[in-house]
Amino acid sequence: MLEIAPRIAGTMALHRVTGVNFPLLGIYEQERIPVSILVNTGHVEIERALINRYRHDYQYSVVYVDLDDTLILNEKVNVEVVRLIYQSINQGIPVKLVTRHGGDLYLILRKHRLQGLFDEVLHLTKDEDKAGFIPEPDAIFIDDSFSERRDVNSARGIRTFDSSMLEVLFDDRK
Image (cartoon, rainbow, N blue to C red; front, side):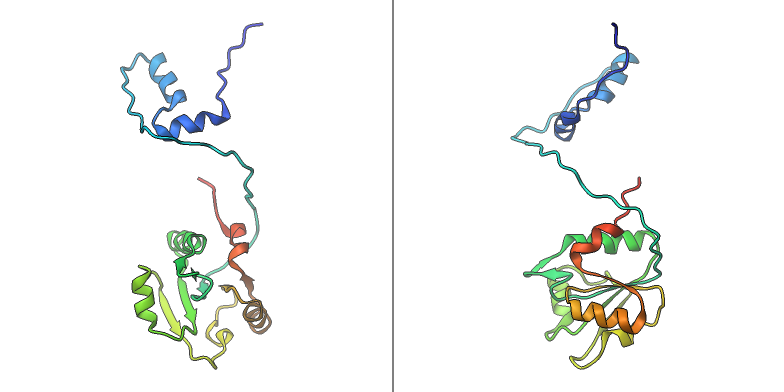
């Protein structure tokens, strides 16, 4: 039996990331378009894995993010939190930092190149309650501390998330 449909191997992505796009080359060949290939040399391996993607009905108008052990974890920026921050910015959703950071807040934001990222920075004292600074009934709150999330949820009735839960909020639609 003659097969007409082209088969694209799943691991062909390995070649694509090095510069060789076989499906596109096939189209160019069919159209008789001259091509040249620029391959990035070096050792590249691929590991194919199942990833989670979610659909949900969560609506939110503001994102509140904690700093210590949430946005900055082990002296490094948590890129998953930054991904949600930029996704929110791209969607026109304000992002506010709410923290009780004990040191020079602007120094740490500058150190980690995070200054200018937030629509508002709320620098609380150690005795101030984070829930008291979240007036929006449809905000979301991201914090590593379960007790903080519980308190904000109890006081405001909003959804709260740990960094490990953020994947449910990622919008991977193109």
